[in-house]
Image 1 (cartoon, rainbow, N blue to C red):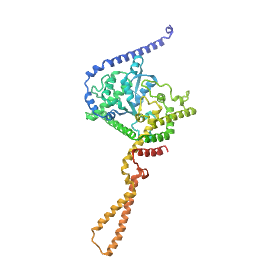
Image 2 (cartoon, rainbow, N blue to C red):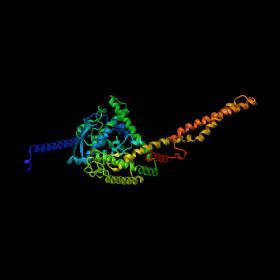
Image 3 (cartoon, rainbow, N blue to C red):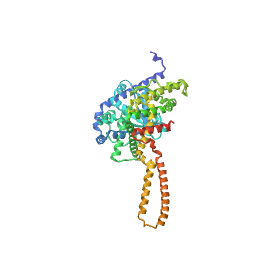
Image 4 (cartoon, rainbow, N blue to C red):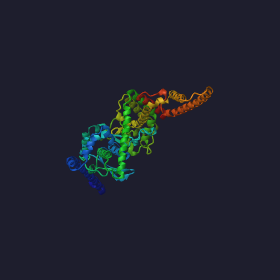
Length: 504
């Protein structure tokens, strides 16, 4: 009854909002019905290169499949994190990107919250959950420079999928069909060279889930890999650029995999030593960096610092913010309070100690060490590991270099090499004098004096030249006292060198 006395403009705005919500709900339910009813008919009606692509894809090894589906795309990762931020702060929902309406350097992102039946269906969607759990993020420039190692999510610019998604090709295709309403790899796509490729099945959805957005990008990567491998007609400069970028992304995967293989080949004792040295030496600087990042976070990025101790589900929202511990509640500038910052530092240090115990006991999965997942990206452990995995990449690359040079370390022993070369020079001189005519005793004595003087000078000059050259070659090779006998010893040597040079 009280609503009758409200001003007309309020009743009009309220009814307008109700109508918009009703329209959104109606379109969402129609889309849900359409996705379950049209997948079978669509699968049979669209001409496609699907069989040829899947036949080629099935012939590859698991790691070859992973390399082809890996992509380096910083803007895509930023949009993906924006989507995850909406889900974490507002609950489950669907999205649509508007490339024609850019916001700063990215396309605009629209979010529509899911309610009722739509929300329950999204929660129980197994294919979407499978893609969500299989998505991994990493930085393509990890290991290039120790100074660039960072705990910030801005260092993440690449996406790779977990092994489980691609071990069974039939299950992978079934998952992609469920997300694309049966249109996976069906139809010819002519717009693969654009910056934001939306396949026809994604456009038909209108608003779509974050997992469908990822599946769309996976199909684009697979189509580009198919074109690269089968030397199809590469029309257009933009498409050629995309094909070259796809090949470079595959190289990034193999580079990352080499580091993972190096780590897995080390024994448990070396793992413990590396973790003890790395976590102990880096604790102070990493804690300071984490607190600084949290204090400087923009309003839209605070959800990233809602550090939780457990993995987040797809549609779970964050409740308690880590920023509440380190930021002044009523401060506009959000300057840290000394006491709160000290307590926060102790909290992060406690997490460091807990992580050290887990790492020393081998309880941290290798995938968690070298990759971030969508479910753990807001955890403090993942924030710490984002910093440390860059250090591990640097150490692994240098260790591999040392192992490759290990075969040539015997050349860096001046005494052995100089003795060998002196023997060669003396034999050469003996060979030359053996064929000469026998001179008179006086001439022989004079010539012996001159020859011995000249040969002595030549041998001394050669010896000095050899020593100088070997000294230059051996600058980057461990000395004899630290001669490397195994990959574990190489890793330990590089850890000590890296920590002493970087942390002092």
